[in-house]
Each structure stands twice: as C-alpha cells, then as structure tokens.
Amino acid sequence: MRFLPTRVHGVIDYLWGLALLSSPWLLGFADIPAAKWTAVIFGVGAILYSAITAYEFGLLKLLPMPLHLILDGFGGLVLAASPFLFGFAAQVYWPHVVFGLFSVVASLVTHTETMLPTGHREPA
Image (cartoon, rainbow, N blue to C red; front, side, top):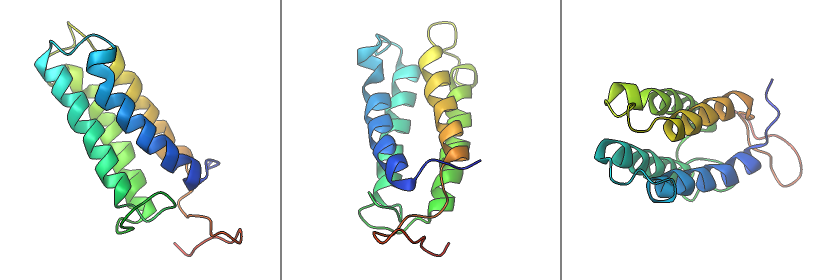
C-alpha cells in the first residue's frame, strides 16, 4: 500500500542522506574505515540521485520516480547487508541495518507519481 506522497519522500531523502553521511561521527564509528566509507558513499549517493529525480525536490528532474524507488529499495538492501558483506559487523552494524531497512520500507510505501500543484497526478 503506497501512502507516502513524493513531496514528503523528497524531504526524507535529503534528511536521510545527510543523517547517514554524518552517522560515522555522530554514532562513533568513524574509526572503522569500511563502516565509515559505506555510510558516506551511500549518504552522498542518495543525495545525488535525489537531486536528479523527477519529483518536487529534484533539481534536474532526470530520473523517473519509479526508478528512484527501485534504487532506494535495492540500495537499502545492500546497505543493510553491508556490515556482513564488507566485514565490519563485529564492530558496528545497527546503523547500516536500520538506515537500510528504512530505505526499503520507504521504497515500498511511496507513491510512484508526483502530485502537481492542482492536486492531479502526473502521468507515470
């Protein structure tokens, strides 16, 4: 069931990206290179592809919203698995798992079409 408007998703995208990007220092795992760089790369990546998404908060509006949501879902799965894939689960794993699963859930509950100012949906 998709209930989250793309406008709200857009705000969440940038906040999520900034939070993930800053999490190594805020949550105390900046001294674990693989964990730190995974968070930084995924955070910056999310901000960049959000900036090119064709939704209310996109700057270039090149990436269709359905593809954005696929990236959110797939990227979230990889991020959640990253501590185990990249070998840092013994030191830290919860931030990556939580951020990753949040991204997966967001990809599943967000509308695939943006809302125009008049309240009509844009064609997919």
